[in-house]
Picture (cartoon, one colour):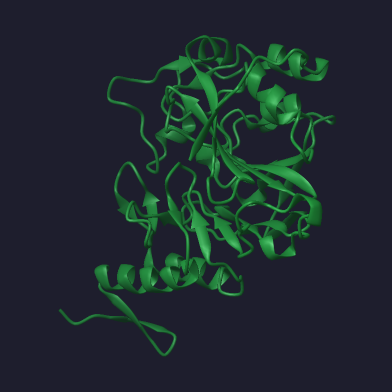
Length: 324
């Protein structure tokens, strides 16, 4: 991926500065990056980390805030070299579980998929000058909730959260009438050709983002690209189904740090939820996790491999235990 350094922006919208100032001292868990309201007692453990899908470090619970993060870290944009409309927002050095939001720039608007703790003035400046205006932020599951309410306020765009994970959103009580927070279930269209789809599994509301690139208008004849622009459907999977390091298949995990696999029936439910989608590419929410071709076939074969490893196979639509 091509690294783009962010320059200081000469002008930042007043509403962005106000949002950062308002939330600058709110506690943020150092282990997972979740932001908490002022009323949260720091003598408690982070509720996200106390869940067995994450963990409280053996050294104990530690907290930080946006001011401290901003003095220690910076943002770098990592642009995909195959499809330059896709970039990742990297925090350097990494923080928490190294959440890396994805920026998707379509012809009808731009979208941020998932969130990370740090939001900086250079990043706000960069996002305010996109070729197509930013239209929304969508989150895949609670491990990426992070400081998403602050992002939504600073960037003045809607925040899309799956209703079935609402109990995990630690700042629900801070959402005011002026906050554009959209709670959704099932499927939610973000814009032409772009939607989020609830798959469950990792969390009840765990979701993927789908971009139908075939629906994008062709480039003007006087500004044709120097290389082919991908037109196949692509899924952005986060932890719902994770692209393996081999970049040839998927993994299905209930708890990543604690190495607990997803239940077979939950895996089959995810597979069925995505069966109708036409896609040939997939990427997870970290750099260099791509399946560049035949991603749908890779999902089918990965499900078969996973079920066999767990001692099961499908026979005429029924789970059958393997004889060992």
